[in-house]
Amino acid sequence: MISVKHLFFVQSFLVAFVMTFVMSFAISALNLGFVSGFLSIWLHAWMAAFIIAFPTLMIILPPMKMLAMKIASKAHDEQ
Image (cartoon, rainbow, N blue to C red):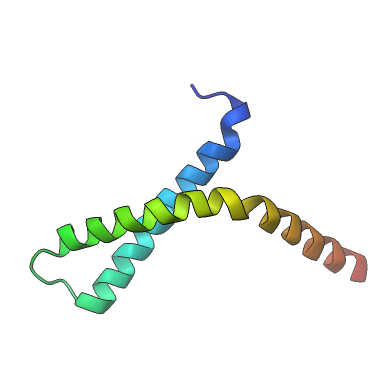
């Protein structure tokens, strides 16, 4: 098992994996349709998207979490 101290890394990996998997499929299908070689094209797009998304997520997730907490805090204060 992976230690809880690595939760941020594991969470970022899983989110990037699933989101790029689904989004690259959807975008490839919308742009190309289910053409011959679709699976290969999609997997290539997915790998490229994942390579970009994972480090990006590791960088932007902490400030986005702080921003979400500020927004939620302000919404709570207004009630």
